[in-house]
Image (cartoon, rainbow, N blue to C red; front, top):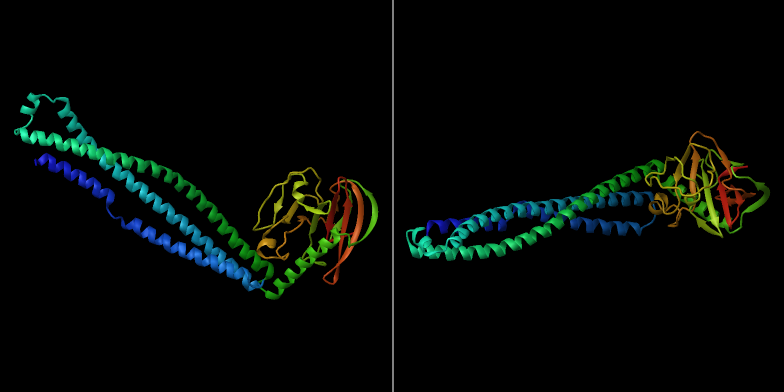
Length: 377
């Protein structure tokens, strides 16, 4: 076989060797990914075990630590996936480029022979007729084999283009996971701040919160002691916030409840949109989509939202139940409470943790009642 054929075969083998060569970096990435997956499974099992234990401060801290480790492991998992995909895509692109160059050079040679296929060309284009015929046959076979390999590689390239899209999606996922990690660390810091890392204080806060939710249920069920005051206009002053800790309240704030036909409603669906000072970390901002006037004057600071908030879902303040109202306060120590809608005003009270929880209620139209808790009147 001539020198030209040896060169072509060497080029082909070089391209194939480049494509199929073992890559230590990718192998290491795969090993790292397997190790991260094991850690994720361990942390998930640890979280499951901790969540079934008693609700103590030490257990809550342990859960936060496990959750933080789990999120960090998921971030590492995403990073390893991005590296793995990136390496595979880059390697394929280089391999495909090398093979394409080799294929193109052989295609030119074959084209020359098929373009000038007459006997004169065969007679004068080489020193040995047998070598020329062998050259043509080998080139044709190699080109055919290359064409099939090139098609397969192009299909693989298309598949990896899709994986490149997956890589971009993973990058977005990584960004979100990083944000979640920040929230979890903030939540842990908030827990330590609120409880002052004291088990007794934590249990007192839990007890107050649970007693409050039970008192609210009793109030809505009509078990509070109420006196009718009379008609009240929208925006009229109806009470004032107790500025210090009181019965079933760890500090001065207004708890607003919206109830329709004895069912809790999200106050955010009724209050008009406005600028808010957010003090409900780690939950963060949410929207308002109603038209009602606000019960406290500007600037309004929100300390807890409605539903499965951080306190409800993570700290289990309400025994696993959601927070049924909206907690707020004026940021300039203006303790005024106003009616969000016109209706009939009632003043009420109910026993809570050895004290008296005072509230006012406004019976509105369309089966709606609004309750304003932790107030004086």
